[in-house]
Length: 236
Image (cartoon, rainbow, N blue to C red):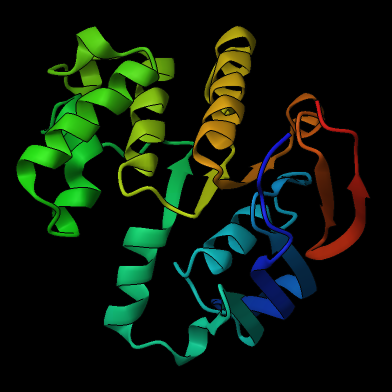
């Protein structure tokens, strides 16, 4: 039982996205519409090239559509200034990438705390929260280790802790188990599910893995840049 609201958090309205490549145009998304409510756990499923990552980047304000609108908490992202959009990404959205994207010169704690430092949160409070999050993801004893000293699963756990440092309303995870073995991948999904429940965070995971997708109560299937099906499953 949870206290999640049925209020929409993210709405995608008729999104089109294309890229110009040399002499040809590549249309990645073709009229995608989607509503994600507060507290939802949604899996975006599809083969490589179906448009999953592109859709996540648009929903998170990392890129903009050629056509269509993206609304976050009642705000049209296209109407925000560059600074306002950057602040929204920093404070309201947590990103988890398949490639981790940790800074190699920073240790685990510094990587986790970086978004909070960018938000000008007090350094002492940021460090306390960073240590708490690293302990929560099982890395209490790896705080001072740099990325090259960590396994793939440990690096992904650092990335998860980093995504939570500013208590975001939305977490976007792009193939978070793609570089991991099946056992470690299962542990990462378990961790994300538990953290979502604890923090009452909305979670969207892009995956090509049917096993990962079945962990989500809601699944959206993307095929060739279009929503082919939307399915509401029983909660795991």
